[in-house]
Length: 204
Image (tube, rainbow, N blue to C red; front, side):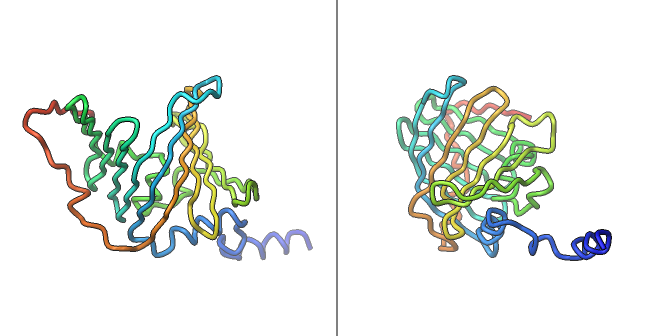
């Protein structure tokens, strides 16, 4: 009887067996084309003390494009145009260019922006409800990943919280507000506008 039950479970689609956290993630990604939200980012050091706090605007256009506009405490833009990721530091008049397929590999951006399967890079662990949100833990499959784990939290199928724990002991926590889905976004916002007098660093 036990073997029969196991055999029946193997025939059931994974989505039917998913817990509330995974169901919220699937609902969030389903038919997602664009996303706009304000965000607050807190960075904690190895002592869990706040090492910095930043604010800005997050824009996403699937597949493959996103923009983090940091407006406080200093202006910085992280821009993915579908081919490259540009880190634009206005105060330094400096830009760092990364090849996107390598820069995003094994990160949450791979499934948030690139429409790739979550299971490709992560093991999924249901955490349950906490602070009125459904939580999901993602464990990187790549042993050489810079991340130890990722936490996602949802309210009514909207992503409200994301936490990145890296192998250096640093924690980055993101809170999202005023989330708007599938509204038109100017495509020029995802195009890097170069400036002749700025330094451009190329990272392979």
